[in-house]
Structures are given as structure tokens and as C-alpha cells.
Image (cartoon, rainbow, N blue to C red; front, top):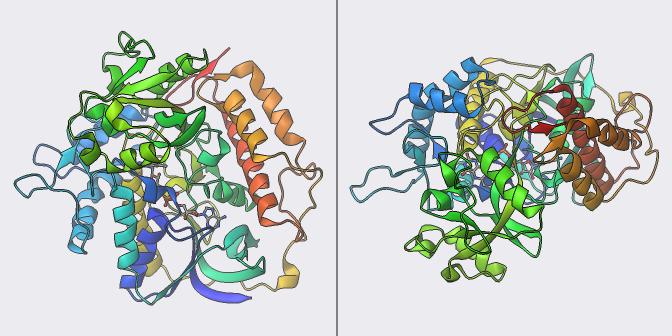
Length: 492
Ligand SMILES: Cc1cc2nc3c(=O)[nH]c(=O)nc-3n(C[C@H](O)[C@H](O)[C@H](O)COP(=O)(O)OP(=O)(O)OC[C@H]3O[C@@H](n4cnc5c(N)ncnc54)[C@H](O)[C@@H]3O)c2cc1C
């Protein structure tokens, strides 16, 4: 048994933000992460961070845009807390050494993305914001923090209804048992449940599945944002073409050059993401190819170095002016129910970042609000930990539950992904949801549901099992939500 004070699971912006703040106060933190420390969605973020810092902007305007994008299904108090706290947290981040891009006068440069009423997105290195932010957060960690790479969290340990530890599998295949006073879940979203996604390969819904097995309350799982423009070559998605490309003048067109958003929405190519994604998808399912026409964008390579790199790696020359695109799973609005300070319904278990559902995003996320949520609510969680001393229940290894063996061979990732897209993708059919629920149920080890697995399960089996569990939970939430709203679009 390894005894630690604070155990953080994951190494994205949520995890690093909490950890950095705790380090500043000289608290000891152990971070375990499934892959290498920069392997996360945060490192991939291109657009930037939305924050009301410009002279024309205000927390009230940011609040209004966030609520409108979320179809007012947002938790209004959580949104207000986010937008009001954001400016001071971002200023402090800049004081700590983070460098955001500036305009010719040396002031912060504010970009525009869909559904924002004014320019409020700050960025770094052009479209390298996420990587720069992660690198800066890693830079400010001190020796009070230990980051353990290639170690996967398998199960949360709960005793008397309180979370007090974690079972993990390290890079040698050894199972470790941690006892901790605070367990912070920061495992990100669920993008890898879908065949086409912008997400890092480690993002397989583990945190959601573990929290479910630990008895935590989950919320809004049906709301999954699909990004309209993944670079797609021969049906395979290879990374994101940021919305900022459409913001800079990119136009979605069919192969014969017809603009597809004409007459669909007054904001055309900058309509809300779900509207654009559905329109692109409607063409793609008919077998048509859709291109983003970037021929009007000057200095494309300089403005979008990451997109240029992704294109060149996959045989697309941006100088030709046509990027082949299709939609892909991008962001999960739902997750483990949590307060802005990260408290979940299970004492001792905290959640931050995309794995959590604080209600900030409602039925659809406003672009560039998620890095912001990770950094702002990460700080609030650290403040909570620093002001709330906590001792976890003690337990012995012999007290850990046995877990169930797998009932039958698990399906492949490809099979799970194709079912997710068919039944729980951009457009969902209400009368087919029972079919997918039944498909998931055949993999439940017992009538008690997707319970913990026994000691023989390896990392690959755990990952597949977590994907099935998360898929099942999303299906149940989609069944319960009868009307189309935000990112949940349902037909008869
Ligand atoms: C391509 C792309 C572009 C984006 N652009 C923007 C943008 O411009 N602005 C914006 O606001 N948002 C953007 N987003 C969304 C945003 O990046 C994410 O919502 C945010 O980074 C999530 O941060 P996180 O810390 O919650 O999770 P992540 O950054 O995804 O980190 C999760 C971590 O948990 C680890 N992990 C997972 N499972 C386990 C396990 N079982 N055990 C141990 N570790 C585990 C992962 O390996 C990873 O390190 C973008 C997302 C993508 C994919």
C-alpha cells in the first residue's frame, strides 16, 4: 500500500492547475497519468482561452454567450462563478510567466470563435495554445509534486461511502494500491468512444466509468459536442482544423465548389458547432466529400502552424486551398456531477476539467470555455483542499472487493466506436436507443450492472470495459432526454 496525501489522476489542464496551486503552498501531490505527461487533450487545444479581459468585454457578456450556447440548460451560478473569477486567474497565470500572443501595440490579442458576441479568445503560439499552457503549468511544478507516467487508474476504493484510495496498474503491469486523503479525478472526456475524434488516444471514458462504479452521481451524459472539421483523408480523421480557420474566412464547400452553409443558418460557416456538424454530416453520409476552402486566407501557414503540420503529415498541401474535412467527437459536456470547487457526491472524491459536469456548459459548450474551466475551477479546488483538512478512512488490502470476472470476450474498440456513431452520434433515433442499450448489457458481468472487474483484468480489458460502461451510461441518458436540445439531436 502506498500512502499519499493528495492523489491526482490525469495530467491535463485540470490536473496540472490543481497541482500547481497546491505546490505553491508546499503541499505534497502525487500525479499518476496513463501515458506520457503531455499526452492529453489539453496539449492539443488550438483555439485558445475565452476570458473577458478586453476593454469592451465584461463578465456579464461572457455569461450571456455561455448561457445562450448551452441552451440555458447551464447551472447559472457555476457559469457566473467561472466568468467572474476568470480574469483574475488568467492575470495571475500571466504573472506566473505564461505568455499569450500580443497585437502590434503589445496588448493581448483577442480572437473570435463561433457564438461569442465579441473577440475574447486569447491564444499562444498562434494555434499552439494548449501545448504552451501545459508546458507552462509543468514548468511551475515544484519538487513537492511527483508525476508518475504510464500508470493507469483502474478503480476508486470506497469504504463506508467515502473515497479513500485508488487501484492502479503501472508500466510494468504491477497493481498498486494507493491510500490518499484527497482523490482528484482529472481524466478528461470520452472522445475515443467514437471512430472519428479530435481527442488524444488516452481519452477513453475511464474516469466516468470509475466514478460510476464508485457510486458518484453523473449528469448530462447525453451531451457530446462533435466538431465539424476534422482533417479527414480516406475516411480516417487525423486531427482538428480549428474553428478559427472558419473565423479567418474558411468556407465549407462540396466537391463542385457549392458552399454548404448558405441558407442553412444566418451565421453560415460560423453557426453553432452542432448546426455546422449536422450539415457536414448530412453530406458525408450521402457519400459526398466536403472541403474547407481556405484560398482566401493570407499567410495560412504562419497563422495556423499546427493545422499546417497535421495537413503535411497526412499528404494534404494547404497551398492547394482545399482541406478535406468531416465531423468528429470533440468534447463531453456531461460528466461526474461536481461543484465549481470539485466536490462530487462521494466524500473524498473530487472532479475537475472535462470529466466533471459542473453545469457550466449546459447542452453545448461555448468555444474555448473548457481550458478556462480547467484552470479556474482547478484553482478553486486547490483552495478548497488547502482550507479543508481531511483524513481518509483506513483500509487493508484484504478488505478490497473481489470484483467480477468478465462474462464474455469483449468487443474490439472499432466495434464499440462504430456502434457509438451509429446509435449515439450526431443524429440519434429514439426508437433505436433500446437496441444499443441491449447490446451493451450483454457485456455486464452480472445482473448488478457494470461492476468492478477482478484482479485478472489487464489494461486493455479495463479500457474496453470502461468504454462499454461509458457508452452504456450515455445511451441511458440519451434515452431519458426525449427532446432535441443543444448537442443532443434526436429523430423519431
Ligand atoms: C484537438 C482539440 C482542440 C481543442 N481546442 C480547445 C480550445 O481551443 N479551447 C478550449 O477551451 N478547449 C479546447 N478543447 C477542449 C479542451 O482541450 C479539453 O476540454 C480540456 O483540455 C480537458 O482538460 P482535462 O484536464 O479535463 O483533460 P485532458 O487534458 O484530456 O487530460 C486528461 C488526462 O487524464 C489522463 N487519463 C485518462 N484516463 C486515465 C486513467 N485511467 N488513469 C490515469 N490517467 C488517465 C489522460 O492521459 C490525460 O493526461 C480542445 C480539445 C481537443 C481535443
